[in-house]
Structures are given as C-alpha cells and as structure tokens.
Image 1 (tube, rainbow, N blue to C red):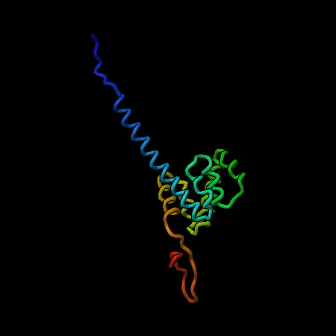
Image 2 (cartoon, rainbow, N blue to C red; image 1 turned 135 degrees about the vertical axis):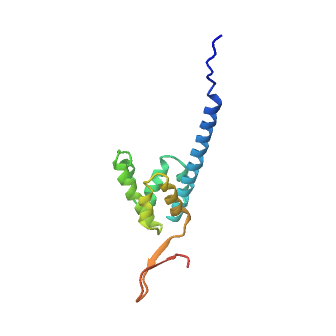
Image 3 (cartoon, rainbow, N blue to C red; image 1 turned 180 degrees about the vertical axis):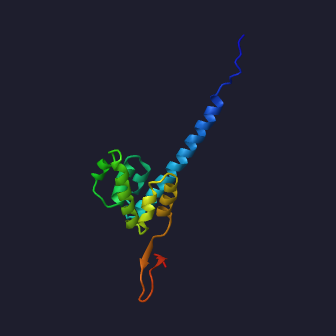
Length: 142
C-alpha cells in the first residue's frame, strides 16, 4: 500500500552502539590498568586493584597523591573538582618521579591518555647536578 523508502536503522544503530561500547571498554581498561601500575609505583600494592573499580579508583588516586580521604568530597563539587584533580595529578607525578607537567596534561581530552600512559609505563626520571655541569636527566635504573 504505502512505501516510504525508509529502511530500518536497527542494524546500523547496533553496529555503531557495539563499536562505541567496545572502544569505551578498551579505554576504560587502559586507564584502569595504568592507574593500577601507578599505584604499584607509589607503593600501594595492597590497594592497586582499586583502579579497576569506579569511585574506589578516586580514593586510590588520592592515596597515590598522599592526601587525606576527605579530598574525595572536593571531587564532588563542580568546577572545584578540576582544580583538585590537577593538584592530585601533580602530586602523583611527583611521587612517582615524573615531571608535574604530565599531571597537568591529564586534564586535556585525548592527551590525557598519553599522559597517563607515560606516568604508568615509563621509568621514573630524576634530575641531578654534577659539580661544574648543568642539570641532566637520567633514568633511575642507570
């Protein structure tokens, strides 16, 4: 009788939804595993698995920054949470021997994936000065 030419969006929508969920799962697992590795670097071996659990991973991040538990409540306040995240991220970077710049970069979308990866998977770097020389950076294990 009446045909509109409009096709069922079900298969296309299903493909996009599946792709979105798969990408989200991969990004979540990457960030969770990176936080697990960061916690291990901070010496929190017994609590490192908290990185895989939502909400609890914020407490882990606060522990890695060596701050008090009540900082979690600051994370619940809109706009304040951005400043608090930056403070915590810079403290975590200092605790694992990385430059605080990597902590600041965690606030930028997409760049934060690189910054968290560098924090988690690279060797810590320390700066030292030899007599009569400028500062140089070497890996900790060297």
